Image 1 (tube, protein in one colour):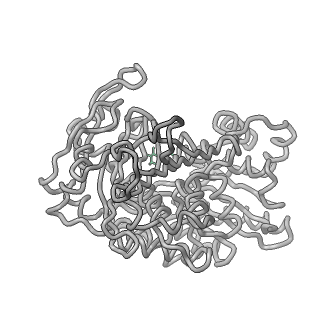
Image 2 (cartoon, helix red, strand yellow):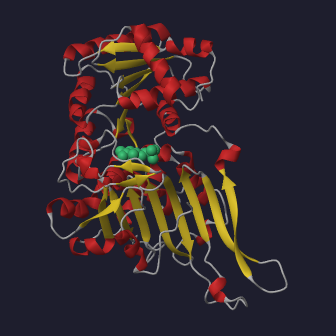
Image 3 (cartoon, rainbow, N blue to C red):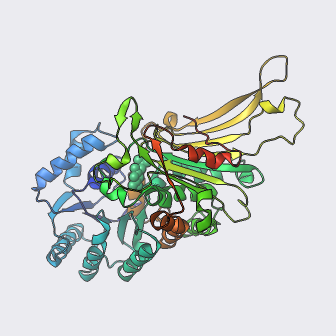
Length: 493
Ligand code: BG6
């Protein structure tokens, strides 16, 4: 499709996200011929940059962070002409006035009123200011072509998320708002829907008659690095479960929409989040485990404990690890436990979904039943990117002996240099496709799911916080959570 000429305005244009993700993504889209024919990126920043110095800075960042650094000098020379730097003060009306001048200049040179994208890569406390500025200066008044992109955190808890959504609704139409959860842009996460609904053989099994339990793991090897201050006020429940893991859950567990169309897909996701059973305060310890990393060793290197990290309160009770169990109260999933875990400073980076099928103990198969393992479907999200189906086969030979085997689909073999999440997501915004973005109701439901737990962990005294050594797979209590039901964490690493 032909995308209309577009002015792309990046608030926070000299920030970390722009540097590592946004500019490399725009550049790769450009190289792939996916940017609009006419576009201009206006990066806003508080620092003063000469235009050429800013373009050089973007070039250096592309060399450092892009998946593709093997491009022709002409490609860069063409692309850099599309970059403008604007030294702005987002608290000052004058800046919005000038910004308006810049985008109108683009429109004039294109001979049409272009679309406008406003990427708000800024701290949450500036959102009010910026959206009011955009409104007062009529910058985003075309409700079909002007779009606003936000990053998490979308609020701090349910009530602040509702406030934020109200504030945005005063200024923009919901269809103009694109809330990014970058996990939804990952190739392997998007493929979950393709895999489930583009095949006839899996969907009939995708329910509580055939599936025993489901596991979602997002393990990180990195600690909090230089984000201690932010993270200490957040914790793994807010930083990961509320968004990324619940979004993966939606992909795995939602019902099929009648049509694969943005609103219907998002309706189905919101419906799924509504049917996630809320955990009562008195049951929290039965369903959840929280923990914090202590000093340990990762890849032979000593690693500090969380409380020693810069920016972290030495008495902090913020969790860096969460394991929990959810139930979904609908016909498809009644009774099936969904286990989730995520944490920092764990042994390896490893994200995966495991569908654990029921065992076959009731059949009369002649083999020694103890030898038969139940089928598992593993969807490796990162860094391994593959899908594995385990099944039993006969061990070649005269006896009926069984052994497990695997069928594997490997992404790297078919697409060794596939687009990054941000490329997919930015192209969707340029195109006006909101399927992979979160609607306000989804965000609010997701906060609702964790609200009681969050409150108890912060203000209550019912839940212990355990520790785990950096470089482990988390606290033993996370294993106990599954053992009680005869399960264990399944992991292909
Ligand atoms: C972010 C979290 O949303 O996701 C970080 O704030 C986390 O704490 C990151 O490290 C993980 O993303 P990825 O793509 O590296 O798995």
